[in-house]
Image (tube, rainbow, N blue to C red; front, side):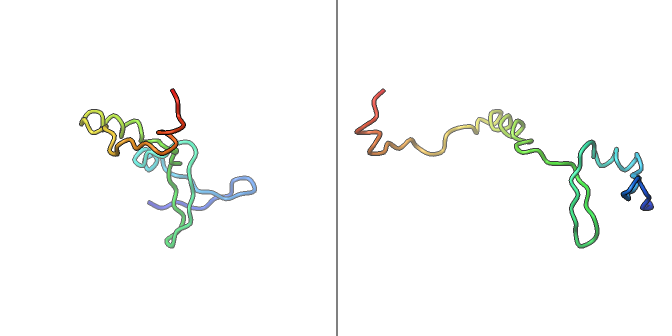
Length: 82
């Protein structure tokens, strides 16, 4: 699909056809990145965006156990009081 660079106020831009936006799932604020082939447009990735699903998957598979043993330090053994 082709598009043209157009004047938008003091800037330039492109019109992205609705079909492309719907197929890509891109909405709202986007991230632009220069690549060797041109400009890459993608959704902004929010930090920790997939964590809920990952934790749910761990819970569903009974894979949410602590892997390392608790280790008491010298401070814990001598100084710490509950």
